[in-house]
Image (cartoon, rainbow, N blue to C red; front, side, top):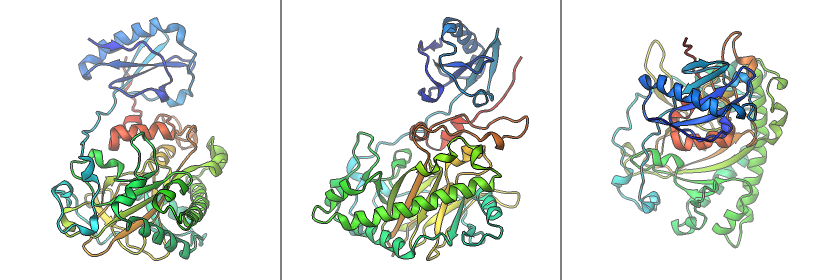
Length: 442
């Protein structure tokens, strides 16, 4: 029998169980309840009946929690009782999680002569690769057709390379050198700055998506959230300044570029800053710097640098140095299936990935890029990513101007921390989980 949890809370702060109820009235006021029940389909009617009873119990709670009406307009199942709408939104099942042995995450990659079973992937060629297609290259210094180029790249690919961005090439190379200096340290020294298990963002460690895959990845990472000084002191007690100075200047230049790109991408959608509530707060966007290391691999056909995923950001700006490895999934069309396209290094170019939050913001017009990293036998590939999003308490929802007349938003409202939490539980089903789909019933 279904059990209705006797607690009302804001929808965007609720933990997501299967299925979820959003309970609203015509005045755009609602409370949220969770139904702890397994199964859907024929049980919906019974769940709805019990939800209606729940609403009657909590009728006095209406009005305590407010939200914009258009954020709950789309439904996957609806049943009406008096003036109350019960909106049932079945959530995505959580993907399987793998618990890898703690020591398996960390290898002295330079000394490994064969790929261990913990890192051996059986099916790296699940989709064909394409030498014919190319990720678009956009010159930001040229104003001729710039917005149109950005629009096509974001809608069709979700990724593009940019030149003419104004970030000094010398700084990009200095950031790469700083990353290489870090990753060539002995493992024991890198572990001094290991990511803590208390949920802290910063520090050294394996890819966070590792738990969603049965095999580990041929890579290591270092995340810098806020000042790099604390971690740098752990790595170089006698001389943290050299590393910190480069990273701080890199962050400054990338912040400027990310602000510019965000404005251009919004403008390419036909928007003005006033069309989005926090457009004036772009200057306050938050970000982390992610250093990535993909060591040379003795058997690259059996190892994966970074498994396929999308970024949980507004956008990510990446410097990939002069070693290829990044691949973007070009979606299928009428002529051929989806396929992996390698992004070739261009000496002074940066790669921009549209993130999940921008897909939400654009109401699906711009797609977040599915991408992965493959490794090679001879070269140690290093990349430096600037991953940015809105302030943590800013609501992200489809911009009203991008919703077709008479249409509905595709996604409900989230904050960046809420979405990161969902991504950590649901991985590639997170966007599907917050998607709103309407099926009216009598």
